[in-house]
Amino acid sequence: MKQYLFKLFNEKEYESVYGKNEFKIPSLRVSLVNSCNEDCFYCHNEGAPKNMPVSIQAGDIINTVYLLKKFGLKKVKFTGGEPLLFKDLKNLLYKIKHIADLDLFITTNGTLIKKRIRDLSPNLLNKISVSLDTLSPDVYKFITGKNLLDEVIAGLNILKKNGYNVEIDCVLLNGLNTSKNSIKYAAMYCAENGFDLQFIELSDKMPPGLYSKYYADPCAVLQNAGFNFKKDRTNDRQFFKIGGSKMTLCRCVKDKGEFHSGRRGGLRLLPNGVLKNFLYE
Ligand code: SF4
Image (cartoon, rainbow, N blue to C red; front, side):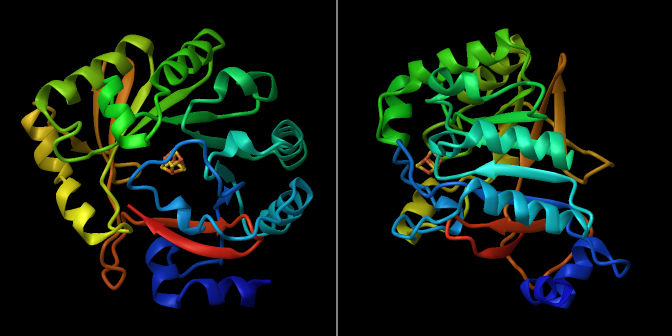
């Protein structure tokens, strides 16, 4: 297993993230499905093309988690496509939390929270991240191709009422949600509801024409809105606090040849059962 895992990282990459000590894999991202009920124009589907055959079952994921626990696995994050489309979610979350005793996270577009709330629990999930790039219905429809903003807001209200730890993920898209007012409105909405907010730099894994049209320098956008982010010493990420809510900035790794200590990484399990490595900062 160790040799197999080493093949996924080149040695320099691995050392830049975890150092030269014992071989460890603290973090696993699981793409439960590659389908989604939305159609965001920037979607890269976590590196799992929509035509990828989906074969992964809850049992396969649980077995993988057990194997990786021997390599220091502490945290599992479920993504998609849209992970709330995975039918066996309740059983999966329960087993991994109670038998493997790991920290569990899920990233969802939020549109199905109302329908699937019985399969979730604040006791099982350390945090639920909800993708929400805008609070404007028209811009939301433009970005996601769907008119589902009301469903997301209703889902967020349910999470708040039930005491979930919620983070809003907001991808910065030039001209769509980067104005001073948009940024301040997003920050105020999160602060008022007790949600954390993560601003995410647009990934270049999309057609170059669209990328150059919608890419915005996150530092410039946040400075323009009057937020002076500072570095968090514990994880090297930039952050800002409003009341009890924490705003953070998640940047993309563009140059894989350039390594530094602020970078983090882990393994990604795709819906066809293949494991891959990933890096972010
Ligand atoms: S909600 Fe997420 S998975 Fe679905 S289309 Fe948008 S970016 Fe892709």
